[in-house]
Length: 293
Image (cartoon, rainbow, N blue to C red; front, top):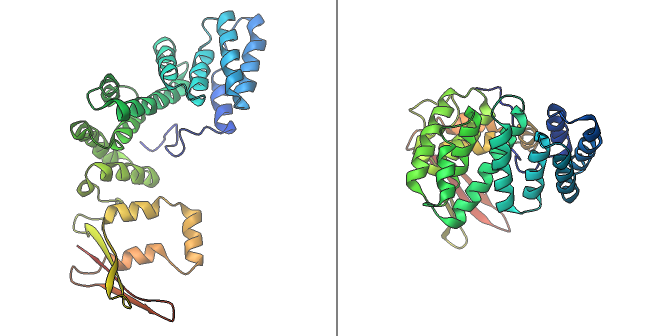
């Protein structure tokens, strides 16, 4: 499952390169006299001039009612212009008319993801029993595998709706079991933790006997009080660090912290062992303890 046609990072912020890829795939099938209109739509989309995109899409549809890319970019423009309700309906029109085969695969996948985000926003404001929730739930069983996973990830972000999130959890657990890409596994893990921290064990090399929680206590020696107390799922802490990416991890190493060696060392601590460090200078006195359970 590692050959994903999209990245989960920054789905809502399409850059010109991404737009170029989509536009290149969706070559217009318009008649010769509609080609200039299709070309103008491409240019407006690449420049992210969404007001112009909306006008250009309407002009192209008036010239060629079968122009799938015009329907897609009409929806995208409404989305970027924050006309959420109109955008959701426009995505639905595009998916209903133009996503029955493989001709518009990339545009259809993008539309499903964008539509899912809009549905999640509606559920947040309208509640767990809304029509938008029914549509979201259908996304757990329809579409391509990664659209289903993305739907489950969006459901994990809801502040309530526990019954629904339990259904999303099943999809996420299966995805984590099958996924081979480490970065994507970490994203899935974070979504699982939002629903049930005990269900995600982090990276695939963590065995079932590893630590479940990391605990941190910072004691202020001068004030004689606990300054910070943290109880965090181990898998969450590790997944967050691994999600930083190689460039950031390299910078952390340059500062003298080897994250991988740190995890390997502290994960081997027994349940009664603690990592202890004391900072005592003219400005502060702090005792830091880290242990696992």
